[in-house]
Amino acid sequence: MFLRYLRQQREFGYPPLILGKSEEPLPGAMLFEDGRAEPGTATATAATTTSATPESAVAAPDSDGDESSAASLSELRDSVGDCRLCGLHEKRSKLVFGVGNENADLMFIGEGPGADEDRIGEPFVGKAGQLLDKILIAAGIKREDVYITNIVKCRPPGNRDPQPDEVATCNPVLKRQIELVKPRIICALGRFASQTLLKSNDGIGRLRGRWYDHGDIKLICTYHPSACLRNESYKRPVWNDFKMLRDEYRKIRSD
Ligand code: URA
Image: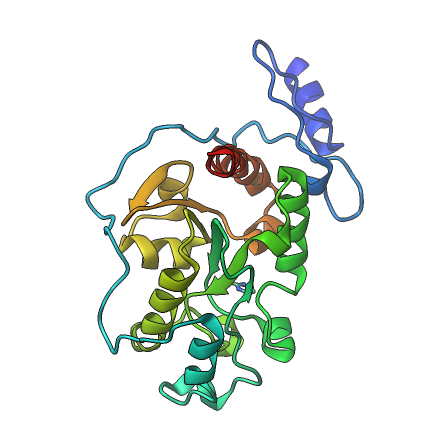
């Protein structure tokens, strides 16, 4: 009887009955697009606060491929030009270099441009980007203060994973972007960016929710905003990761 009641509560989208310690509600930004409150996320795990570097983590980005000596982001962008070094250029519309504050303390790195980004030439401007904007607002982080880019700068057709040769071709550009911006914190958005930056095959569920050392930059991973749009149960862990990110970001900026 009671179980049926609980099941009905979930079906109607009510938050779970929490016996004992209750979780703080998700901020408005993490609610559904139609304004409905988020149903229970009883199975979502809380982020850990363990600071650790797993065996698989690398201390610094790859140095494979050509090094870039561009002295500024605009010089780097010019040097990339109308890049045709890998097959991704064949189907792309616009190369999506990166956007934001050149001296950002915080850098977000996604996987690669989607259809909207390919059309507009800017990262995270589609639906996933709009959710990222909302999460940033909820965390009190201004989009114009951060720098946003992707592992690969051209859209993989049909949003497939970038191939190893495509990642390797783009790597010197990403590496130089990181060197020039000199962020104190990197947030890898989604499985692909997290696995690439950490050189790990672990799933994002294992990688997220903790701090890594990426050279002298602190790195955290979380689910991709588009995963949250597909599966509501990712919203709670994403918000937990963003709270860790926000706290560290505040600490760094008050130093
Ligand atoms: N997904 C990404 O990983 N990057 C973007 O720029 C847009 C969607």
